[in-house]
Length: 77
Image (tube, rainbow, N blue to C red):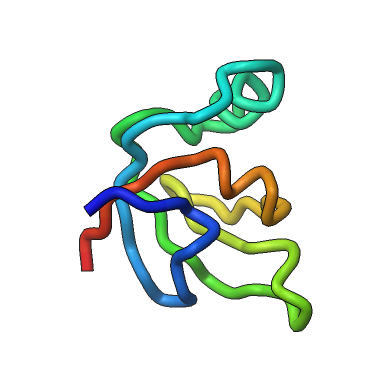
């Protein structure tokens, strides 16, 4: 089942399936290593829900909620 990365809760793991916006934002995110097929895990959210910290490969990455909403994922856990 495909959903937005922004919808995942802390501790959930998923695989990136696609980007809904292929503009400069997607290019920036892909340059950070978050590409189709990457496995990600949501580590935590700020108290207001923004930003979201995820673990991709071997490092932590923080994304704004609107940035995470452009990334479609399929759940692994």
